Image (tube, rainbow, N blue to C red):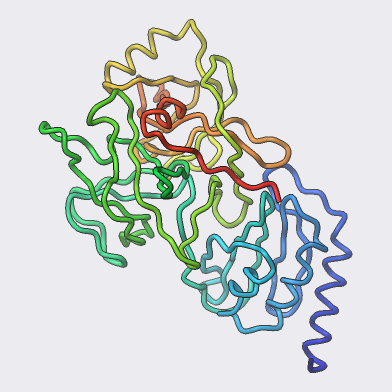
Length: 340
């Protein structure tokens, strides 16, 4: 090991050690320190000592080795994004229910995959990775990760794909969107429950491979740690819930309307033609398909409750399709985040 690298490793270790006692607010990162061209090191549900080794290794290696070094240390890189005028990049990785964020100089690696709360595009025409969205395409939001007959899949709202009179899916091609491009092509809708049942849900193929990870988390961008999905919960009146949508943003929270709001639920069900539950939260076009989840715990975990379905009335009330009947109809299992 040369003297410059040894000095960098020692500096990183000291900065992380000094910051180890920091305590972030719920849903925020704990700052750990910076050295060299690694200008941000931050963690959630982990100590700064836990990431001292990976951070030091990344500081002493070329930028294109960052994801490889994280994987070697047991972390799963989830997403990267250019920052500082594209002269640097942010990278988010998870291990169990812990999250790590770094920023360093260099070109952002091509790293992106399925997470709840991401922007989707649905189209009749064939989608091309890196190409613009075709005319007539609609934009929605991704929901939870599931397994169907042993294969992973991602949930969203059935009306994003649409159903023709002959009960086939209208916009059957989908991609994770990277505006203004179509982004990462997912393929065709695998199952559309609205074809045969009053449930506004469909399932899509998800990407695979080291640079196309799929994770049971609700994405909150790169500046805040993701929420970890650990199970399901029932849509009970009065329960506090949140949702994330590509238009309205992350963590839009309120309560499920109680029994006194049955008329609203009935009206919303008639409008959508599906079985829905309404909330006190507002939503907008493009939020459809997004994850509805319990209020986050102090440990950054949530439970899946439903899929954003529609907006009702003057006050733009958000109504959702409960998750449990969707899983039953698909004979699917929700993927949950590990506790490591």
